[in-house]
Image (cartoon, rainbow, N blue to C red; front, top):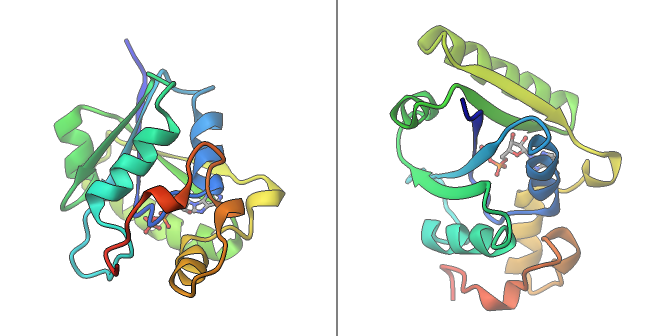
Length: 160
Ligand code: ADP
């Protein structure tokens, strides 16, 4: 049976940190669904559609990576897709505490689903979408933080 993981996140925008986690997870899974969570309460820089396009462009030559979006609970989305693994990345102890709580709550809600964590490489430990958004909003050059295969100039923000 094909082993699939859902990689849920805001990805606003998708960074080299996210990209690294996906490529490393492809050693563990046959297929990764990168699922952009549509959270109406968050003030996003890029629309869900733009984020999906950006991610699809990064993985345009990697058929085992799919891109989707969802609303509501991640475990409900996984059940709908019949996926048994949730993939997340870890940078710091703060990430660990945050991810631990989410994964343990998810485990209570959906015992059949396993959360799998990949620890980031040291050179990506400081890469953070919030900071990248601030750089873009302030007109700075954020190209070194996003995958080399895309150019941020190709994507319109929701604030333009
Ligand atoms: P969320 O709003 O769900 O935290 P993010 O887009 O910020 O969405 O992150 C999605 C996942 O990617 C999270 O598990 C996060 O810890 C992980 N992640 C974010 N940045 C990095 C990075 N630089 N290296 C490794 N993992 C990362």
